[in-house]
Length: 470
Image 1 (cartoon, rainbow, N blue to C red):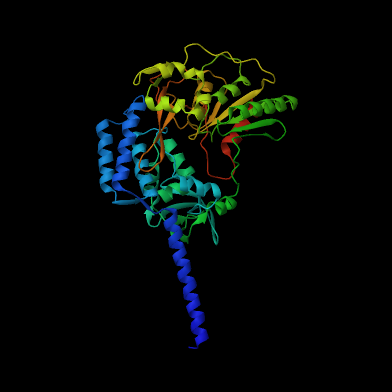
Image 2: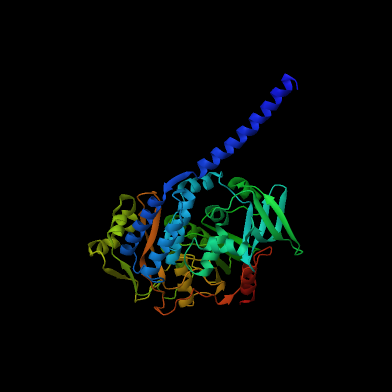
C-alpha cells in the first residue's frame, strides 16, 4: 500500500473515531453521571417530609407505610451513581405512587432547554393512542416513514411493559396517566432508559407484522416532520365554515391578555352574527381559574360557583412562596388571613353563595357546547365541573383527567441535593355542587371517544350537534 493510500485510510479512521468520540461526549453531556444514591435518597426523604407539612392529606390514596416501603424498595434497586434522568425516573415513580396529578417534579432543566431550542433527541415516533397492548401512531424517521402503525414492541420490550413503565411516572386517574404517557412519549421513553437504535416491531394497516430500525430525531426535525405543527398559542379563535365559532382554550395563563382576547373574540362574534360556538378544553391542563370566570361572564347569566366548601392547609412553605417578591402581587391581599394563621391549621375557602355573572358588552346569546377529555385538568377541570353542575352548556367528549373533588394550588419545594423544583398541593377543592362523595371525573353529557383516524371526530360530533340544535 502506498504512503498516500495509507494516509487516506488513516484519515478515514480518524474521522470515524472523531465521530464516535463526539457521539460519546454528546451523550455524556446530555445525561452524565451526576448524583449518588445517597443524594437521591436524601432528596426523596426531604420531599416527603415537606409534602406532609404542605399537603392537606398526603396519604389520601396510600398509607404512610406503603409509601415508605415503596421508597425503600426503589432506593435499594438504584445503582451507586445515577445520571440526571435515572434520578428523575426514581423521583417520578415515588411521587406518582402518591397518586395524584398535582404532585411531582419538573423535568430536568437540561431536557427542558433542549426541547425549547430544538436539540432534544429521542425516538421519531408520534403517538396518537395506546390500545390493545399497542402504541398507535406514525414513525417519522428519514427513510422509514410509516403511518398509522400499531407498535408491538420497542427494542424487544412489549408495548404493554413500556406503557406500564411510562404511566408509573405520573400520578392521578388512569386516564390522565395514559394521556400523559402519550403526550410526553418521547421524553418519558428517554427517562425510562430506552435508547437508540430503536428496533420497532409493528403491525401495518394490513395487520402484517414487520420490523424497522431507526435512530434519534431532534425535536426541531420532529416538529417539522409531524403532519400538523403544534400551535404554541394558549388560546385561539377561528370560524368553521361561515357560521360556527371555535375557541380552543388550551391554557389558563396571562389573565390580562385573556381579558383582551375575550373582548376581541366576542366582539367579532357579535359583529359576524355567529350563533353557534364550540369551546375546546381538551388540551387545557389548567392555570389561573380567573380566566374561567372571565370566559363564563360571556356565556351565562346563571348564578354559579366554581368550588364548594374547600380548604387550604397552612404551612410555612406556602407562606414563604406567597411572600416572595415575585409572587406577592399575584397572590394579593386575599391571602392576608392565611398568613396570620398557625401552620398546620386549615383555611376554609370556597363558597356557599353563588356568583352572579357580570353584565358585559358582547355577551354571547347563541348555542354553545364544550369539548372535554382526559387532559382537561386542574383549573380547566373546575371550569368543566361548573358547567356540568350548573347546566350552563352541554359537555361533549370523554371524562376529564381529574375527579371533581381533588387537590390543587401547588406549593413548590426545591430539593437540596439535585436542585430540582418539585411540587405538591396545598388545597382540597370540593366540586361546585358540594358532593364530596363523588370521586369520579367530570363526565360529558355526550360521550364521544376520540379515534386515531384522520380528522377530529369529537369536534365533528359537536358541529353536527350544534347544527341540529335550534
